[in-house]
Length: 142
Image 1 (cartoon, rainbow, N blue to C red):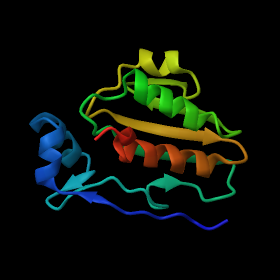
Image 2: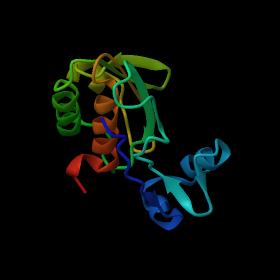
Image 3: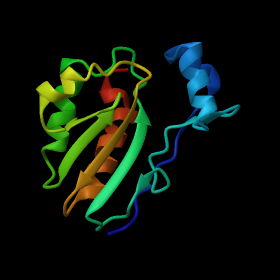
Image 4: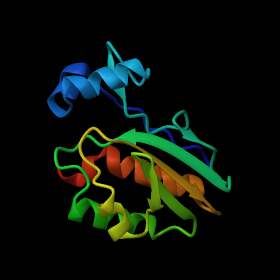
């Protein structure tokens, strides 16, 4: 299995359209964003593990204006459910089953929220990669 890579950077001016000044400051302070922008990094560089590993984890910030409401949550669950691996979302100090729409909706994931997607199982890397890409593509909404 080959390592998938798709790098994409959002400029700071575009980032300012989606996030508040406080959210941008937080990204800059934790090293996620710099003067050039924010690397939404769909690459082997921001997903731990590699294809074939039993564990993978990746981080991304929700950038779509409406956050994860019912439709994106449904798409997220459908995508996560395609994989055999156990998949979880971690945000705001909580970790929930990514294959449960109720659990995802209970997290109140809004624009600017940084989430960690982790998977454990035979297709962990592919699960994390697919879900990170889904979030990076703003669930096809924008």
